[in-house]
Image (cartoon, rainbow over all chains, first blue to last red; front, side, top):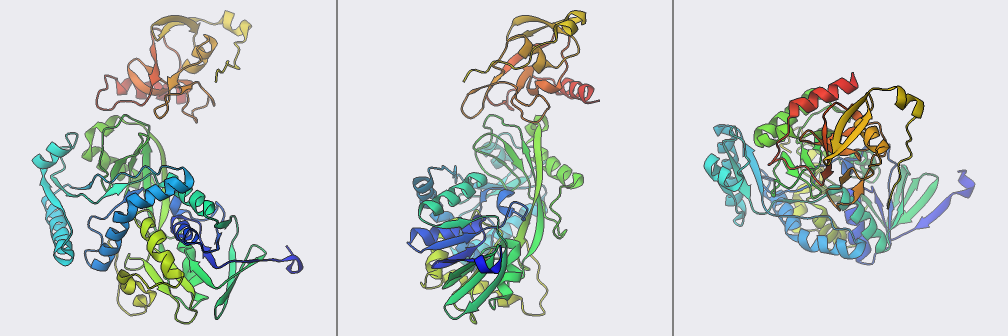
Length: 380
Length: 122
């Protein structure tokens, strides 16, 4: 499209990114009445939101940063109301189940490390229920567990959803509340003046007083243009999915879960391989072996698909939430737990974007924490 | 929705071909040797191969090339077989796949299933 025919679209807020994070924020904004535009890339983009595992997971998160655990709990506890709101606005049942989840341990060292991690969290947070189960306890709770599992941790706060239904529910709900989606367009540039941002994308200009960067792996380049620092990088996860089988597993676990429609998902690999989202046999083999070790009856199951997707990870693995000091009205919202945190993104980030107070837990999540010589590591 | 099969046997080929006997839901069928189970059932007039796990809707083969998973049946006690990828064999006992497979209770012989699949693909 030539410059002369370039169209201009005005809104109160522009959300860049139509994945789970962007649409959750957009839904929250739209439901509070804000005139919201969402800009989404095409299906050739890296799509973490179409490849994830679907856990609404609390257990063990933030053991070295209790504010992250608080933030995660605040989302998990809001999830039931959030799921009902999505159902009302989109007609999509995202199949939220929060029956508590298990983290399996295959040797005593893992079990001890697990206990220590969860005890640290309970000491820091107080309200943090968990149970450590030995093999007999676990067998009583999950009779199909395999003999090589020596024990597990359990917390009652964990759950799961159907992540593809969630993405669809968020898109439909946000649009039902008036958000306008522009798909298949790439943001070329953000020009920021006080109280007015101009986003150039796909031959069009979008103008708003506020802009939210929720573009996943696209955030580092966008953040720079509005005085923010968001050094996220890809981390590959691979997933196997089985044929549909009758229900045999009511609880989600970190590595294995049965979906609402009967398929079994196996996953949780982590690899630093840049922007390569292909699968690899040796990783899939390890995932399958661990799944069968956990539930030996899976030896019989047929796998029907495998895929990989790229997590959006910051150097310490925690989210980046920040309003730009140099460009007020520009926010970055980026994390790798787009499912778990969807309720918090819709119900707590959106009011902040519209001028409310920053949620208490979020002081620790500014991107400047990475502007040091410290070497970071993330434990997912 | 009723779906009548679009596939019709080439009669000159059928006559010249050896046949095998098998059964579908205990109904005895005589079909040409060398064809897939899905083709054999379709040419025998069977158009309900399975019921879906989620809504229990009736299903019949769609792609006939191993992609759509609509043609699943139970063959010799092994559930969820892709009938378009498996060659008919004498004495095969085929049953419609009623909903999802049950992993907890499964009398099937998985080794047989693997061998049959390898035969067709090679």
